[in-house]
Image (spheres, rainbow, N blue to C red):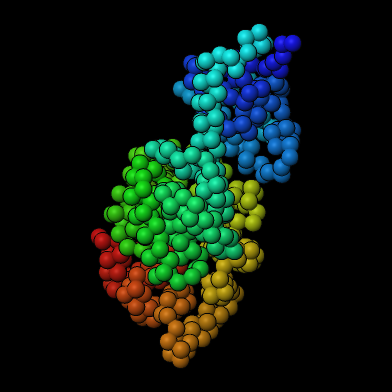
Amino acid sequence: MTETAPTRRIYRLSSFRLDSSRKFMERDGTVLPLGPRVIDTLTVLVENAGEVVDKETLLRRVWPDANVVESSLTKNICILRKILDDGNHGPSSIQTVARRGYRFVGPIEQEADPNASPVLESPRGARSAVIFVAAGIALLITLAWGWSSRRGAQETFNVSDREYLVGRHIWLKMERSEMLKALDRFERAAELNPKSAFAHAGIADAHVAMTMLALGTPADNLRKARAAAIRAVELDSNLVLPHVSLGFVKLISDFDPTGSEREFRKAIQLDPQSALARFGYGILLSHSGRLDEARTVLANARELDPVSTLVGVESARVEYYARRYSRAVELLNDILYREPASSQAHYYMALSLRAMSRPGEALAHLRQARVTESVLAEDEAWIAAAHDGGAATRKLLAERLRLVAANGAAPDVLLVPAADAGEVPVAISALEQMWKTRELPLLQLKVHPRFDSLRSDPRFQTLVQRIWRE
């Protein structure tokens, strides 16, 4: 008895050929690197061509056994539009219908069922299946890395990759409570595959993030970050992520803006579609005061990854640095609509609202930001200045001065309250001590509004010039 192959649904979409049953799409005989969830998203839209498919239906059809956020669907739509509309300057094949869902409006032809010639017996079909598996795995890894590029890598998807993927997913949350978990996953990936450039880049990124989030000892974090980033570049210098990691290290550990810019530009050169490379470059540009350039680079990153919380927050931070507080609030509201628990978004919302003389709202967001007790005390006092004339800030500064005198606490605890209180000599003295050990807050001096009270002091200007090697 001859077995009958299952019915296959194949559609022609202009120059594309979609095999929805086998979950792949090709163009001119070349299988495109689309994951199965992306194919499922397109299939639902094509099967209902001309009709609006609401978001709930799409989420239920594409992820029947999982609870996912709407941003996953949005990302799939972005991927499909980029491929289907490549080179097309007219309307997109996939329309967004406000507050409802999406509609496929492109040309469609359905092919006849090809079961009379089973695909598994066709050399071309067999070759396409192999290409599809390899391409699908590569895209799955690329998407889950959230902005990385696999260019030049020849690794096989294995346990090490899975550990890395989980670590990167956790890392992208950029939460203090989660970063040690991300580091653990990256370290497991490196143990399973010591030659994985991705795993070592992940270790470097975790230690950089820990420094920014006030976890662990900064000197120890940065030493480990540098070693891991250098190792990642040694393992594969053609990958984007190692250069991004090294760019961060050169900026926050070495205070080397020239070297940092070289690494970020190299990463963008390797993959112009890497939103993470542009995100890193945007941070360098914003801290160095090149705000217009930063705005452009981050706008490009948002086009590449429109639902990225990190890119969105950094874009808002540029507007905060530029004293365009209303625009910062607008961007942050968009993020919090999608990700209501984002600590970073709540924090910069608090700063922006305080600068707009809206202290009550600012305080509400600050208390959702999950910052350290030290930062919380500084910012609560600063927000209270709208009502108490700065009494809380002066009280906090006096307490910390006693702490430094009695216990030898690090001088950086004086910087922010001294700047907020307008105590310029105290703030400058703290900065001079911090420069000796290259403390991370120094990188914000050039642009952060909280330091405006210090800008006219020649010693402050000299320090900024040293930091940025001007």
